[in-house]
Length: 224
Image 1: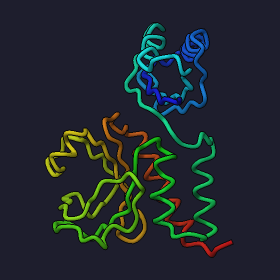
Image 2 (image 1 turned 60 degrees about the vertical axis):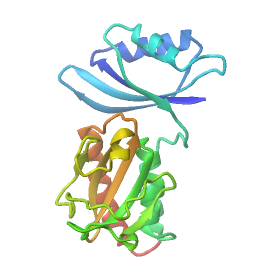
Image 3 (image 1 turned 90 degrees about the horizontal axis):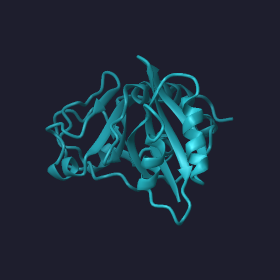
């Protein structure tokens, strides 16, 4: 089974090599690695690994944190395609115009960002309950936004939506649903979420804003 480790590591040569060596010695394969942030002497990396059937997930934490200075921020099961060109594939699909852009974004963005779900909302629905029709598209695992008042709409820019914000339903707060949102197109907003964390980082938010900005332009091009 595959798992996603979010690691906070000292940003110095040899640390990731030491992590890879420790995992390899334990019979654990690294499938992919994404560098999320670098700065102030640390780096934040998302590492997808294949865990042998006879190993417990908690053992991953023990193995990795045996490397000096390495901390595990989160560990969660991972399911999805391991494609290093996920963003390019999404933009290519948008440019072909074979499917509605909102549907493509809601389906593909969780894979790009290793998140649990995404929705595309009507950004003009500020200060009033969302009607069902205001949800343009949603992935399978997305929670129901119907009837919620979203005080952060309309979006003037990308925004982190931590799990402790007061507008969230109590059930969502109990599930520690972390979210981020970015403007998309004419008054719409793309929201990505994951239950149980980890919280989205600023680098992920900037990446989402950059991608939705490109997607806005690409979606307006004539189909190829």
